[in-house]
Amino acid sequence: MAVRPLHYHLPLFPGFQLLDVAAPLDILNIRTQYPDTSAITLTVSAATLDPVSVKPIPPAKAKWRFDLPASNINTACNQQMLPQCTFADMISSLKAGKVADDGSGEFKPIDVLIIPGGPGTRLNRIYNTDTTFGEVKFPNTQELQDFLTAVAPYVRHSIITICTGSHVLSQTGLLDGRQVTTNSARYDDVTKQTGDVNWQRNKRWLRDVVPENKVPDGLSLQPRIEIWSSAGITAGIDVMLEFISAHYGGIEVGMETAKRMEYRWEREREASYFL
Image (tube, rainbow, N blue to C red):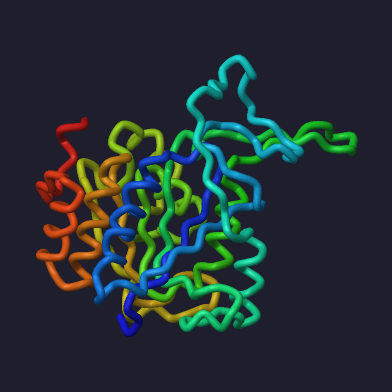
């Protein structure tokens, strides 16, 4: 890759898995304490600027509800994350060329896109309309899928999916033909919905690359973009440690970071323990 991966972008949706997000970001936070990777940046986006909940709770001004009985939504112990920009803001800036490595643009470029999973990946929203059609149902991650499709040509280095984040990305067609894994417990549910992906069972994490001979079309991922995917939740730690090892100086960097986290990193490629 010609670009060194320093600018990370995290798109959120209601019902994201907290550790899918927190664990990889904490690894990046640790790496910013070292001179060689102190320039790492992060941009967090969402459909709106409202706080995004880890529970399936719509934003306060949302004109939709989840297709769940209210009694089934446990709002206790809910955490929220605040986005820095909207999906529309980021798409507009990318298309207008208003992104820059040196911070002179509206936003930093997208070197690495991190896509979390969580219960929100398998829920639907119900919108109330003013037409004769009444209620309309859409996937909870439809806005995210549209965002991923729009920004795919602008990703400069890698995409990292955690847990069922790979399911979200697979629904855009951007993973067709790629070797990918996902949450071990939800493997069968996910893989039967997107047959064009080369799903791999019993993998803690995987690394694939868009072929170098792929002809750029301006609509999808560029040639040589890396696709990193992981199994569920804690596997996000493993895939991110592997990623920083690959691009920031070797296995010693990953081991150093794991030690700082007091995390016993086994580098296990199989996920059979969780099956």
